[in-house]
Image (tube, rainbow, N blue to C red; front, side, top):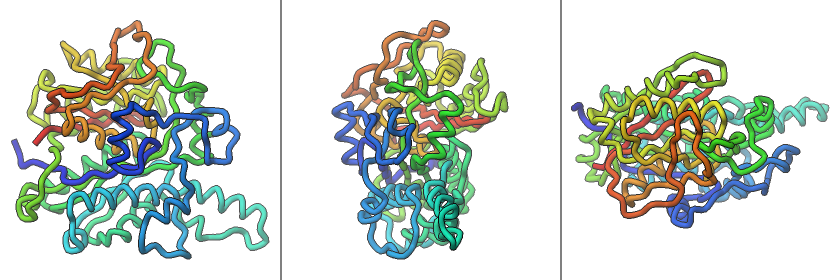
Length: 401
C-alpha cells in the first residue's frame, strides 16, 4: 500500500451547526436543519422546505477577522472561509505551513447570489450596476478569497463538477500529496442557496414540498441546503515533522462518469458502481471490511434507485447505510465535504447516522437504511458517496488511523 494521506483538520458550516462542535451537538440530538424558515427573498424559498443557515452575509462576515469592509464577498466565499479556517486551526497550521500549502476548493453556484444583485442593479441603475458584485460570480472567486484569508500561495485551484465537487477536490488534493507536489492541502467545497439554484432545481421537478425521504418508496424529491466542509490533508512526512495528530486517513477514492444523461443517473448505477469499486480498490481493503456507507441519497426517484442498485451490485451483505441529507439538505458542491466531515466524526465517536423520514423500502432493491442514531459502534472504514449531474460520480473511503 502506498504512503497514506492523513486528515489532520476538519471544518464545517451548515444549517445544523456553524462549527464542528455545533455540528456534533446537533448530531447527538438528531437535529434537522430542513424547515420552511428562509432568509432568502424568494417565492419558492417561502413555499418549499430548505436547509438554510439563518445568518445574514454581514453576520457571517463578522465571524471572520481581517476582511476588508469595502470588499464584496459572496455568501459562498464566506461559508468556505469559515469552514477552511476552522480546519486549519484544528490542524494547528502555522503561517509558514499555510504559505507553502495547497488549496483545492469547489463550488457549483459560486457567487451567483451577488450576481443576482448585480443584475437587479443593472436593470434599475443608470450606472448599469456595481461591477464589484459581478466579480464574485465565478466559482474561482471563493477559492481566491479562502486563499487570501489563510495566505495560501503555493497552489490554488477550483473544481466544479456539480454535486461531486467537494469529493473531487479531496481526490485531487490526495493526488497532489502522493505526487509530492504538496505536503499539505486544504480541500473541500462550499455552496450557498440563491434564487438561481432553487429556481433551477425546481425547473427539473426534483424539489420536494415536504422534508425529503432518502431511500423511501414514496420519496418526492430533495431539499436544497447550504454548507461548507473543508479538510486539511497531509503527507505522513508532514504529520511527523509537525508532530500533528491525525484524525483519520483518506484511504481510497474513485471517480467515474457514466455520461448516461445530462442530469439523471443510469438505471443500473454504472457510474456509482465504478466510483465505489475504484475507491475500494485504491484503499486495498475488501468490500466486506466497510463498516458504514454514508450514501449520496438525495431523495429523488432517480438517484436513490440508481445508488441502491449499485450498492446491491457490490455488497453481498450490505453494511449499515444512511443518507444525512434529511439533516443538512442537499448542499450541492459542499455535499461531499460536509458528509466526509461527518464520516470523520462517525469514526472518532463510533456513530452511524440516522436516515431521517424513512418509512418504506424501495420495492426494486428492498434496502432499509439506519433510521436512528447508533452509538458506541466500532467504525474503521466508511464509504462516502457523492454523485453529480452528467454522471460525474465520486466515492471516498475514509478510515481510522
